[in-house]
Image (cartoon, rainbow, N blue to C red):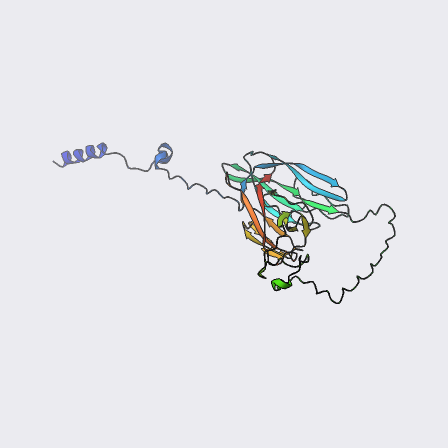
Length: 315
């Protein structure tokens, strides 16, 4: 009886699957393995897709003005870039000597101003930095030619203007009001026009304003700006076609991404830069509100369209 029970237990044990540990089981059954978490893609701060590629440094001369700039070709090679630092004329940078192209110097030895960019390629392991490129953007104007003798400078003082006749009223920018019976046949050039009822009439002079890249440069309806590059915008004012001094200006609409000041005087430019690109069909328009002493009380709009391009090195 006991022997029959023992044989039965042995047969049952042989019929059960083996649960012993098999050192090769994990290799034979990869389904039981736990996959490691994927490495997250790290995107460098400020990175953007390149749409303009580096094509070399250029130097051009116009009279006594030498311009240091960078040529680009509009192309999308599939690489990426970001702005590292914008440096002014003669300013030192920690990136000096790290760019593949040389940062040029002015004749007096100062380094030219411009912007450092870092280039990336996207690999299965993430964004990989491949190089640094310097985009030069500077201008030098010589005041005098030091190669030859300077002509003597003479000054002459103009005689003082004669005093006005005692009977002449003082000229003033303030509006003048007179009864209709005392209104002269024509108003002086600095008086406001007065109608028959003695009321002030709007200034009839043609006044306008625009934006230039220099204090006395031409008015530009649109400007191409490289992404991250600083550009000086100078609001200018005109009365009857003549340039007049700007008293104040302020940004009324379309503020840039980075701006030095949002308002200022005619002796101060608006130094601005853009970090974002316009979507298809979209444009950036900056509008200034300008005032001038030549037309007191009037606010002149000045607008410029900005085309932002994104530069970097072609890979």
